[in-house]
Length: 91
Image (cartoon, rainbow, N blue to C red; front, side, top):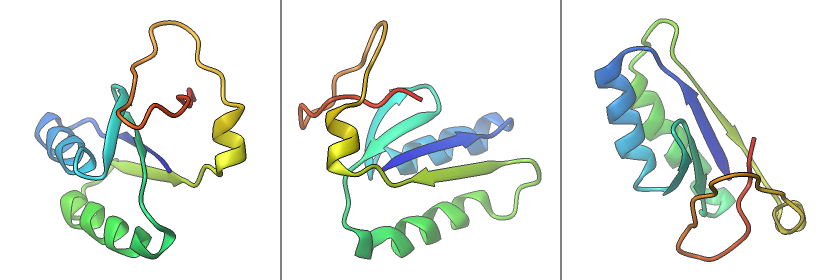
């Protein structure tokens, strides 16, 4: 899974980033790669909705990346490695 966010409020952005760190690894400032089962998606969404609390102008996007897509993903530049040593996705 790739989870991205666009949040202008510094405190809220930090809380969301901290929460995302419990699900995966930061690969760019506002991009996390996460590994969890599809069954866990509602829990992840609910946790992030609680963090946002209806904040105006804040948004989070969640993309499912299949293993085949991840295997052919290309990273360019200073790529942050992730603990499970899978290829990085750059959006």
